[in-house]
Image 1: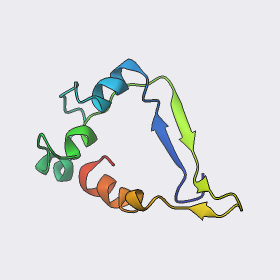
Image 2: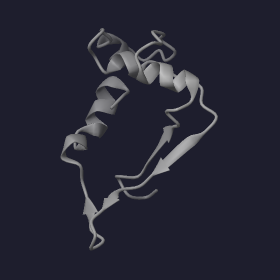
Image 3: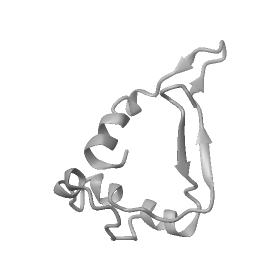
Length: 89
């Protein structure tokens, strides 16, 4: 968990979490001004202000190449910025 690519997520197949993933849970659980300012039907912040309950967590590490080097998914390079701005990536 020390590597920047390591992460812990709520298990996405749990009913309440799945409702967020499928955009069926329109509820603001987290009151955080920066994220609330950007909430809209098309913003990632609409998910960032939600806090669904989950009983299980998923621990993920970085992707490794066959020779053991860490491979960074180019589409996820701004993940930390997205979480800062919207509370969701």
